[in-house]
Length: 284
Image 1 (cartoon, rainbow, N blue to C red):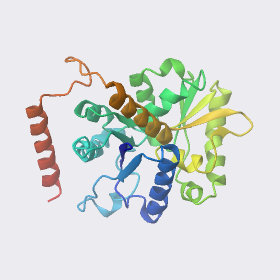
Image 2: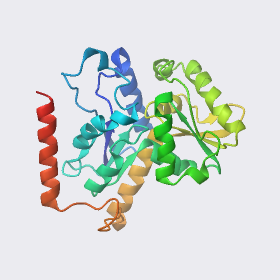
Image 3: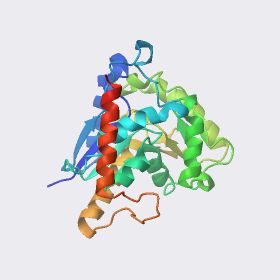
Image 4: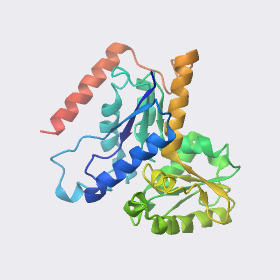
């Protein structure tokens, strides 16, 4: 029997408006392409809040602003907190900001991966100096902070290690097999990073990577610089870590004073009860 992986989005299933289905179908096509035939990937989203004002119901609220990211992180962690009990072997959070990643990792015994962390880990095996390309200016600072927290500053170029472009223009067309505009816009940012010393580019987005990978785009044209799809990287690392846990028992640390220390069951259950209660209260 193959593995079961939960891939959780940071947005609800209609948040990208009329283009939502095209994007989700594309993400799942990528998931099936990169995982083994016997691995089953289940795709989930955060729940839609009916009380959110109309002006804030669609992308990019709220994850693109660092100061309000915790509003969505609670929903994400709540959505995956029982994945282990449901029989999943690993979890992937499909968002470049890795929202809720480290909290969820401490709550679950199964592997929990996310886009940017996974892409950075793979990128260091493909080149010596990496740069990150983000899909929006609003998340550049958060990604720079991630480079520091994850310990990748020394593997990144010094000058502006995170670049950006506006991904929303051309994304849907790329999922429909017409990636020219998306590639052209992306490469403007990527070439700047290459000129500043990057020899591998990290895609900091759970949708940009699949949109390019599905079109066979895995390196910068005329530069032979690899482009790392973080969603593909996260799925493969989740698959690998789940295999290692099942085969030899290797799993993440649980040092009592460590970052990923799991609380006692009674504390965990109470935290989950209060979390679910708060979410239920907020939806009234």
